[in-house]
Length: 362
Ligand SMILES: *Cc1c(COP(=O)(O)O)cnc(C)c1O
Image 1: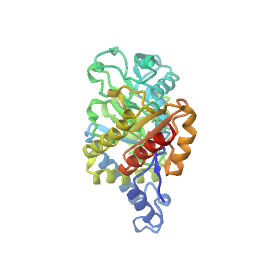
Image 2: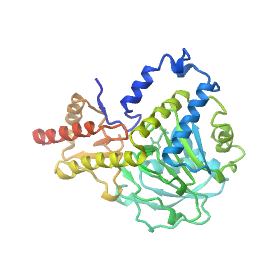
Image 3: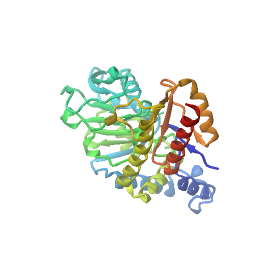
Image 4: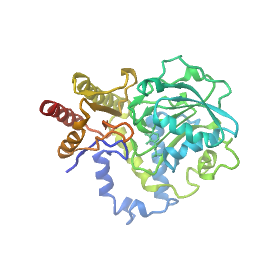
């Protein structure tokens, strides 16, 4: 029996994708081997990786002037790779702080001998807001403007891409927890990147999309596997890539295409999120702290009026097949992560459980 898994990551994957992977697991492409056992340099796997890239380019409309890189080390690896590829020691970058992931990224970047100029910090609201358009300025000498498009822990999404504020400064965005959840205008960015385990597949794979003119100025001491130019020149196969993760990512991409592509995905995700937020807002027992314009369609944190009931709420949810609703350890309460693979039935089951719990326990 499959449960409804609201984990923030690694997260629920589409059942048809899991079933396909299972059906061809021990004999992939009539090779007599699983995809886990074939050479990454063999024709079958090279084709598989090329197909994943081509499908991503088609789905997200990635222009030819951008490279797609399959990297390891997760999004956290890129926190350090970004300054290594885009700055020299002593340079500065600009950053918008909207929550824990942008803060972590800035901190890790600063270990590389660069200074992050914070152009907007939403600390005052407890990171329940995002900056208004035009409310901040980006220094022209910043090597890039950094932000997190969807703060997974706080459930806060940037409602706009700050192209006007950035001017000629390239924008670098962490899209880990909203990757391919809706259309994306890649051309507005210098770099978009994210770990796969939220919305794109299994852990072990980071997908970085980088504008070509930003390649080739990495610091000389950048490890080769994090030098975007080296990896681009080697089709992300300088060393052994995470083959199973790339294979499964490819299956997910075809599943998204089958769902109607990113426009359809975005409409479905908005509808799922709206139903859940409406249920929270209509209740006097559940609360979401995020200002409406900045609410995430992917991660929906909510608290109970009486935190003493948290444990019972979670135990009842588990028993009803609603898993991993506990909020991040740093904020408490609940969090429902409702990525692409979360079904309408999952949302309905959660809303019904919440209503029943409120009726009988509040
Ligand atoms: C999960 C997450 C990360 C960290 O990803 P890892 O792959 O574990 O390094 C970074 N940024 C955001 C927004 C995330 O949701």
